[in-house]
Length: 300
Image 1 (spheres, rainbow, N blue to C red):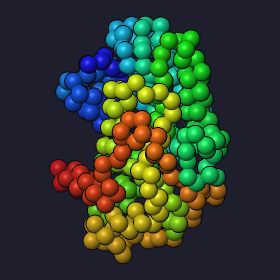
Image 2: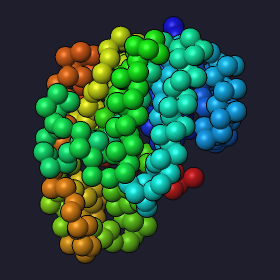
Image 3: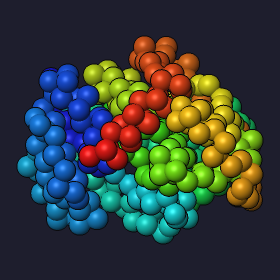
Image 4: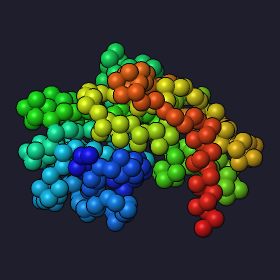
């Protein structure tokens, strides 16, 4: 059992990670700006932009493992927001304090946005990290800095490049929640033509990856995706079929954003080989689980 501090533990992915770590009987602490709570976890209300608050929580918890999930993620502008620069500063400060207080293992949440998206099928060992957004540049910078400084800091560093997570609790503007939410209200879901291939993975499998990383000694960068390309249109239409409203999915009603990447899919062989991790929930089952949760939520 390890003493683990999870930043962003009240967020979409974080709440699932916290639950998974509690299931492994770790001593789990959560640094979050929210007042959320999980039975068994110890919550610390912290703004990581505040240096004094960050110092205080690290000194109080003295974590052995740091799972760093917190970042600026507003769907409207996260790719270009200057808040990404603030998160580089906050993350490096957090990592240095963690190491200075005896921390041993950092596991950070990165993104498929760190890759050169022109390659389509992304491998940790062969696809260059050449981001085309400020978000991707900043995420990759934290990964590179932490990994390069790991020996001097005396910590191990693992980094998860997450592809396209979905599930209950995701922002309502995200594809699955948007389409399901509109159809559940009896409204049409207006989408692009949906020709883009993406790699969607249920949040429960993403969380399980982080839990496996905590319990392992694996280091380096890992892709976290399904490894299965699926078009945006197929996802939207599957949601429509599950809700018995396929005709309410309006493909082509929106313009595809300029420069949108035609294909972005993960090579997940490294995670399978080094961690024994592979996604357990297929797309159909994951979508059904998400829709059931959204339907139950609306019934309350």
